[in-house]
Length: 193
Image (cartoon, rainbow, N blue to C red; front, top):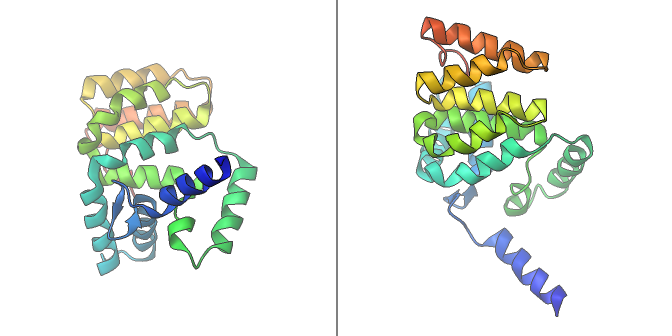
């Protein structure tokens, strides 16, 4: 009986579109298209524009996914497993796009927050908690995403000033760089590309 329940729940999870699906593609898939197209060309193509429209349509419904991506502690074995799974199920995008490697989660999270910016302000309380996480990789990602969302200047400056003294050199350097940009008024210029 429990095996049948697991099968039904798993099938529903994989094949029933949720709030983060647009035109039968998941937020992850749209973000992958968007990021790949931006890397390939300086000129905006149709695929990139279509992906941007889809991501904007999904909008803030993707916040739980964003927070989940930020909370993920990068794991080498999990990334290898997901990479192998993605290669094996190329023919089944519905399954393949449910799984994103840990490395790609950071890239997709930044692209999502950079594209929607202040629209994602509802995620700020959760992101502020992640800025104080014990894992430096999570702190780094959270600070970077927070800067892309563009919360009020005093809030962002307080977080950045706090992390100038961070025990991790990458978090410290990021906080210093963002504070310098904030001082010049161009914190968001050039961060996405």
